[in-house]
Length: 150
Image (cartoon, rainbow, N blue to C red):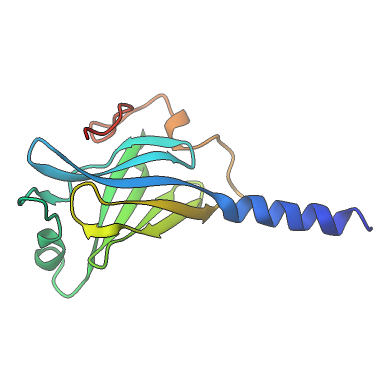
C-alpha cells in the first residue's frame, strides 16, 4: 500500500511533464507550426495563413467568423483521418491534440510572428497506446521530419 502512493504520484508527474517545442515558421509564403518531439511528433503543420512580413495572425481574424482560433493538421493520417492537429489561438497559445487523447500546449513568446516559440507542457492520455503520432507509417503532405529554417 505504501508503494502505491509514490508510484501514483510519479505516474501523474510523468503524464503532466510530457511536451516538446512549438515554433512559428514560414515556408513557401505560408505560416506553419513546427513541432519538435510533441508526444512523439516532429514536423510541420499545414499552413494556417499566408505569410505577411513577420506576422502570421491575420488569418485568425478572417477564418471562422466570431472564433479566435484555427485548427491545422500535423503528423500524418491514419485511415484518412488526421492523426494529430494543432489549435492556433489569436493570443499566441498553441495546443497539440492527437487521436490518442494526448495534449500539450504553451503560449508563443512573440505571438504569431515567425521565429516565435515556446516549450510545451502536457499530458498523455491513459488511452494512449503508441509512442506518438509520428510512429504512423502514413505521413501527410502537411508534415515533414526536417528542422525549421532559421
